[in-house]
Image 1: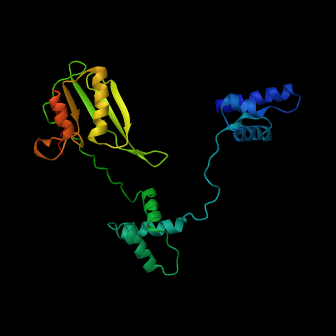
Image 2 (image 1 turned 90 degrees about the vertical axis):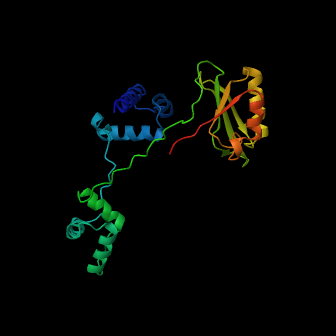
Image 3 (image 1 turned 135 degrees about the horizontal axis):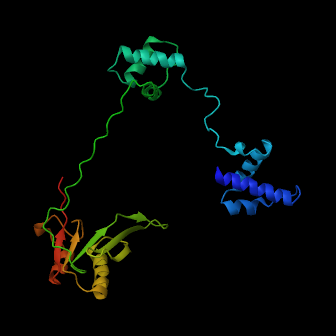
Length: 247
């Protein structure tokens, strides 16, 4: 409301300076960050009310008429059916009203549900809170300095404009939370991940451990969960840590 008032008062000042001439609405609307359509609407309402600022107040967007609204009589019929069958839901009540009122237009079950809720005949169900994961169960090493533990993970995938899948790979230092790498790979395989790790090793040195969620290519379901990539990391003297969340 304050901005609308400033807008129309500025328009009025410019209009008076131009002695009833033309006001540059495009420039004025840019100053206030509104569209020209909005600006013209405000000015029109302002002038129609003989320059009264009250005309700029927010107006209700509720339609003046609702031809498809449920009549009070029909609402009372729905409520009465619910009182007669308090354990019935909107679908059974709808079927019952259709059966007992042949030839009469009966609102859908979804509309009846809204009527019952509005009239206080239903109680919304409480949403069950999801149990949070208990977190990491493995005894991971502490992150007391940079390069102690790196966290590596794929952040899903998305399709580029040429319909090629891109797999974002992130590599973060667990101590400093510094983003070491964020690379878009065409394939989430050992070859491409190893290239990213090689580049990070040359720039920052070798970490003591690398932590992952255990998905491919970081771990497998085989013996010791080893993969070609994890064997390569072990040979470099890097410890492998896998996050296992409790259900």
